[in-house]
Amino acid sequence: MSERIEKLRFAVEQGEKCQAEHLESIPYRAGAGNEVVWEGIVEVFKVTGIPNVAKCFAWDFNDGTEDRVATVLKKPPVHSVKDAVTFWLGYLGHSQGVKVSDPH
Image (cartoon, rainbow, N blue to C red; front, side):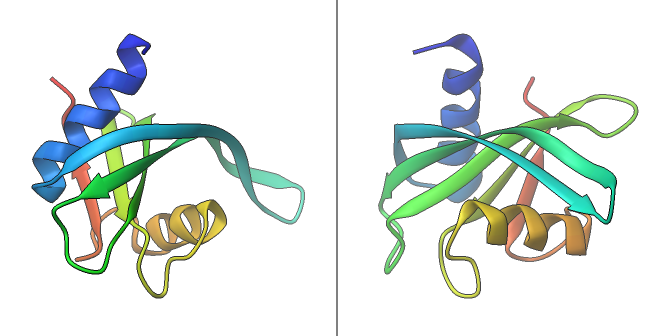
């Protein structure tokens, strides 16, 4: 497992208080018209220890000052990578359903 994926797994486990196992990496680009709003690799983790939740999406990004990690649980209204990134972008990382952490 790469250092990046391990860092994200740790962020999922610490932020969501669960156990996480990496499943896959999904490239994703979110845009508005011709503008790319966010582009990166979203990691999908199988999670255990959270009632009624089986997966979590996680990715790293830079907020303009420092490297950060976002985690979003796969639970309504989030059903896909697209939903997770859209949810995060819509709430700018400050929603109850989105965890943003310092990876250090």
